Length: 242
Image 1 (cartoon, rainbow, N blue to C red):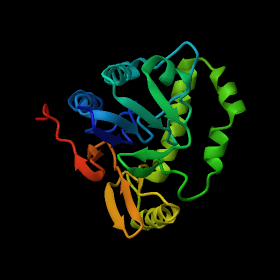
Image 2: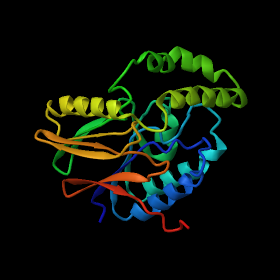
Image 3: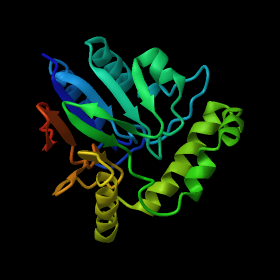
Image 4: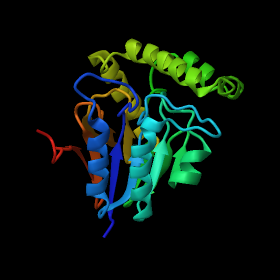
């Protein structure tokens, strides 16, 4: 029976990361493995390192992952996509063609008797000026006028600026700021807050709830599993790894 909710984030597919080139194949393997049990799959942002939604064009290197997601959805798994700071421009294609429900501002609801808040986490700390500029609907429309052969490389360059600023994972100072922000959100009545973005997996149990950061699918292959109302942080070990 499909009774388990899974959470993944921060694979940043579409960019070349040294020694992490097979992470897409490993993700597809994971999706096939969880299919018999997964009632829900939450993608908590930045699955793709860059996404711009052209009306008649999709990046060919994304086809295998889109097919894997569609195959999982066809088994009856409900897939929810909480947009991140690298893939915020995902639009109707994901819902209409892949069967994935998109949540631009995160998911809030009850699953397995637990009140959940699921957000990527990029808005929990720091200035949001760049985010507001990039998410501007007029600017996105203007950007789509560019031919994909120009728009995609330009988007990869802009995405690289964000990645260089954030480094490979967050500092201890940033992680502590996230914990403080998590406590504040949990105090509003949520049982569990799930986030990504920091690339550092952690599970913190407080008096008023649980804060879980998924980590990343770049090198750690970390994910969350919610079963019978209990949430656990796990690491996937690829069967086909050498």
